[in-house]
Length: 429
Image (cartoon, rainbow, N blue to C red; front, side, top):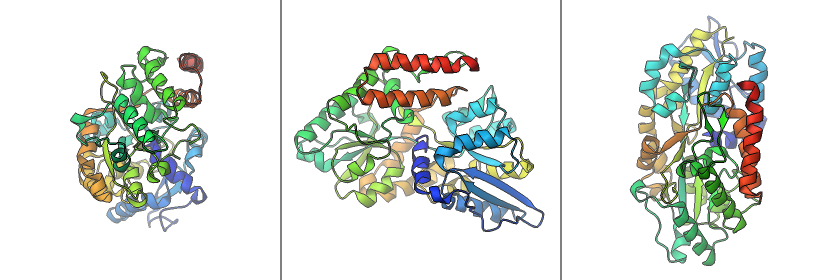
């Protein structure tokens, strides 16, 4: 997600498909005055139960009902129901790159009166991703970044010193691949794994590090730009991982973390949700260090996750807005959204309180994670591009990533992707 981040949402939704339609509130009847806020999202109901309970405790006249939709059905469900002006949605979760498209379609309530509060509550990147045509359409609830998890035992076996958690001593991708190959010679099955092997969120930084940009440019952000030298070089490097057997072709997105947990690879690119996962499952000496950058390139890390917005057709806009402000702008409320999951709060005050807890999950293995994440969000974070054509762009690029790692010639496949994206965008201009 990912996205989950797109990543975390994809995992939790996949694990909880059978819970679709469940409510996180124990009451369906609402309060005495009938004030009910209906929240729609892709998370397990248990995830949002704490923030719902906290809000209801402070707002005795309001009940929040949560309905879950499987992640892979969320986008189509929103399109159908919002287009039909369905009043049974008041607040809904929005994958951040989709904000501009939903706003352009008239599916989000204008929240511009909250601009000042929103700017103060989060980072510039997490504020700007919710802005389209100079209006604010959603509020950031979660944030994310990516890190490199290291199997120190595998490196020691190869006679290689583990990389430092200090961002000033960040490894290069070239250095990482060389060390990964050496670890393979010493017994590791693979050299380097990405968690989102075909996901734009995790692969965007490769091109950005080499000066290729996000892949979307132009005044209207509807010009594809994925054939420039930066993109071509980054994707050729990525293709070489698979053609040289440094990374496996047969393992899909979000299926690679068990390979690291089993000790079969020295380097794994993952997110904050993996800290707790590896603390429980990895039985070797591991650590967390900065995501690499290319030699001579800039350090870039993914940024962003989920925002929440209000349905313009809602009959409970005042109550919906109050709940949204509690979940995003109130530090305690925002912190409650992460009580049952390992994702980063978008509210900076909530984030500062949360990160030490995240670091503690991994014990000595995750020492320094709080400072690392704080530094990455502050200095190297690059959000996914804001464009009304992002949905089509991401879909077509993810297909291109899949083809490239499976052997398609890089330059030709990127040209095909650019042509396909431009054709899809003609009707948006």
